[in-house]
Length: 207
Image (tube, rainbow, N blue to C red; front, side, top):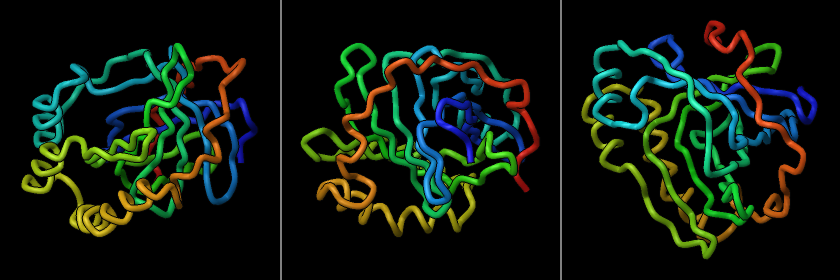
């Protein structure tokens, strides 16, 4: 387990390669859940040409892409990461005001933590759910999800699991239960600096 204030790296791994890597700051680390914040100005590395779904489609189908360095901006997000579910909930806040913008549900592979705890591997599965402060919901990138399913770029087990849980996740979000409580909404990243990626951001994936 890491201490609050240490850097942990979130990585998307596709075809055994890093698709993206983002530097986060640990807020709380327990056996069940890692809570970490993504700060404005923090460094991340991603496929060249971000954003742009046509480039994503080409990269995923050809297995070829280049990486570029970026800086996060506009929002800060509190990530609630678990190893036992196919989604991650992000409390997304406006960087200027600190107000909650939404709960952002990123459907992704369950997190696999590296032995030293300083990085975890997952893969964004393209489907997202936006949960507004009034608990209304909006599905995002369903066209990307449909393309991914039709193209077979994700493991069938991942696709089947996401399809089996998405209605329950939306119901929990609307009801404010499960992963969608207000427990962390008063937390603020006071004094938290935006980290750079560590030198070993491109370490081999978790087996």
